[in-house]
Length: 106
Image 1: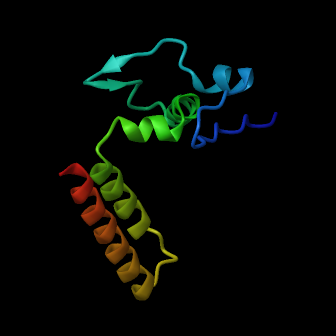
Image 2: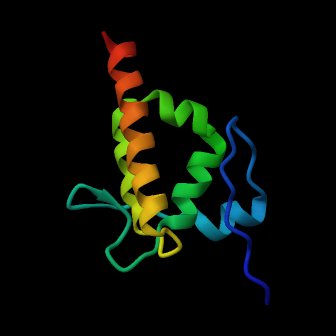
Image 3: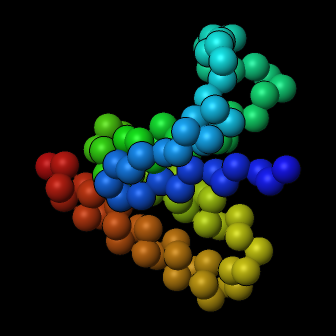
């Protein structure tokens, strides 16, 4: 049996397949210690399905841009393909984007 492909969020909202819905939507959405799902349950497919249906533009519009940039920087810096030069370039680029965000928020 083949694995149902994970939903792939796009800039604008897009539908998921019925197979993705059945595979990645919990039968019963639990709320445990402030979180959806169970501690042992991988919710990645569910989260990706929500982001796919919502669209990344809409998702980003609900959270301050500086928080997105901080998350992007943290994840990108963990990439083993980054050498020191690329790492420095990434940090400088995020700093430049944060400066733009500060100007936009004023």
